[in-house]
Image 1 (cartoon, one colour):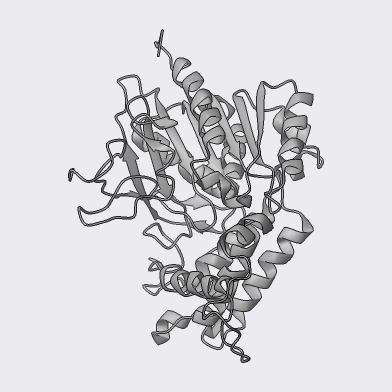
Image 2 (cartoon, rainbow, N blue to C red; image 1 turned 45 degrees about the horizontal axis):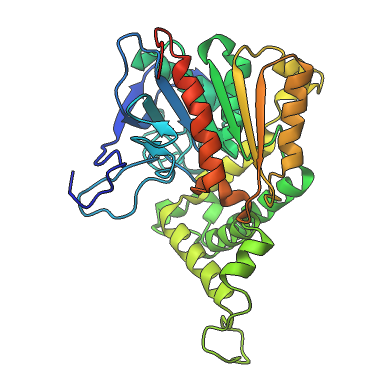
Amino acid sequence: MPHDFPADSVGLVEPQTFHFNEPLLLTCGRSLSSYDLVVETYGALNSEGSNAVLICHALSGNHHVAGYHSPEDRKPGWWDSAVGPGKPIDTDRFFVVALNNLGGCHGSTGPDSINPETGERYGPDFPMVTVRDWVASQARLADRLGIRQWAAVVGGSLGGMQAMQWAIDFPERLRHCLVIASAPKLSAQNIAFNEVARHAISKDPEFLGGRYQDHDTYPKQGLMLARMVGHITYLSDDAMGARFGRELRGGKLSFDYDADFEVESYLRYQGETFSRSFDANTYLLMTKALDYYDPAAEYGDDLVSALERTRCQFLVVSFTTDWRFSPERSREIVDALAAAGKPVSYAEVDAPQGHDAFLMPIPRYMDIFRGYMQRVARDIPGTEDN
């Protein structure tokens, strides 16, 4: 590891690809005859296979959670603040597994992949996948890795939904579940935001019915707009005000329709960058998976009944200025767990950053996270004192 990588970094990491030939029946009624999952791991699996932690990613996340992909790389994985030696998810104690979900655009089988049945790119024909489907594929990955039970399943936002679904669908296969900045289902407002983003993409002239790659193009403007709308919802008013205020780019108004304010320039930059790195069909698919998530639906719309199946311990964390997944939504989960008689710890962190706070090394948040993961470490079978 180059000497200028931080001492608490996992260092250089290399993704692995796991191929699965067993068909996976999906909630939508279709199936994938075979598929790949791209995975990164950090730390070492103990001889009992009992110290593994699964990290589930959010909408635009992927398998690259921590560390660096090359000696020249200066941008670490998306949750590097939380994963590494001595960090809350301590890779000296845990074997950490992170993957790019099915339908993703960072190596796992998705719309950009070749359909083995046709020899052509899936494109818009890739089947709709749900949180439950992701969890099923992750369970197969755990089998492949020799992990019978996770020490913990951890996720923020859409990742928190996956963690919760793990506890419901495979109650014997995890000891702890960490649900961070998440919700038991999307509100109508959240679904509306996702629909605006999808509409921006699908109505872009370069979308071409989802076949844009066959024409060597992509819906750049639609993706930019989708990301700009999404990014606004991930930040709080306070965070945007503190960072940009009404600061002018050129020191004075231009009296045209160019970007006068720094916040306008920032959003355009974010949209531009995102449009070059994320697949449009994947964005449509991921937002639909968010919209569809509702674990209570199969239990008479009763979240308590759904969570009565769980057997693990829970940590639920929310952030005061997160209006996309507000603390009220986290408290719905906590109240349902309490009503079901399940062990749950809850923390509401006072933070100005909005929804994106779950990705940031906020001291109180990190202290809570670290303290709970120390409990997870103590609960590893055969561990007397950590």
